[in-house]
Image (tube, rainbow, N blue to C red; front, side, top):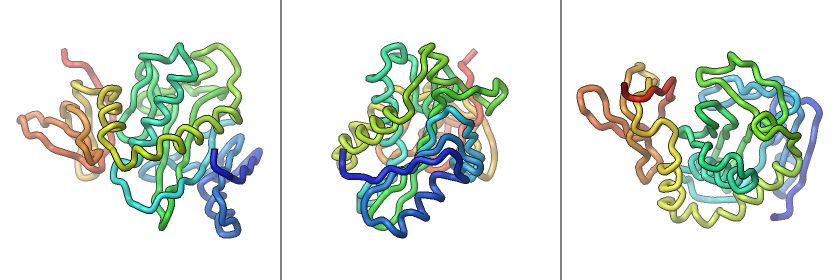
Length: 239
């Protein structure tokens, strides 16, 4: 792992916000981890529910170029590392476009990625040892500790995920590798889904991901569209 300063807190407003505060005074790489966030924010400014026991952290990756599919690269790293570390997850994890990791249809974790001059900031949240509200989110949620029936070391998992992202950085110049992987493990592929593109919500079939990381869908009149920004609200198999 590259040289990096690690900061841990019992409580924070947000690891992303604390990262921004610390980054003003530190020129080296940083990781900020907390036991719980009070104002965690996910994609599209949605609340990032961060109860005690879960793994909540933000770190950075030095990279100059803006990569449209960067969130999928992080999803690839998360999916691959969790599958390699925990054998019971093999074949049961999927990547929900663009930034969530699903286990048997329930949310296990996710990422929020932001590009700044010369670097990416990556926020990660994984349900590890935290209690789960059964009504949480449209897809529900599940914890890694419950799946494996054991306590997870958040500190070690944090280190492993950062190391995985750093070790796979070279793939950012060859996006076909991680996009192909994401397509093979895509949540909702070949299923009907409710899509919200920001202007309207509608049903469409999820076909896959293109080489720039856009979601490919087929609308009910047969029109095929590539979406660069949208939310998947629910997924159902064809009857």
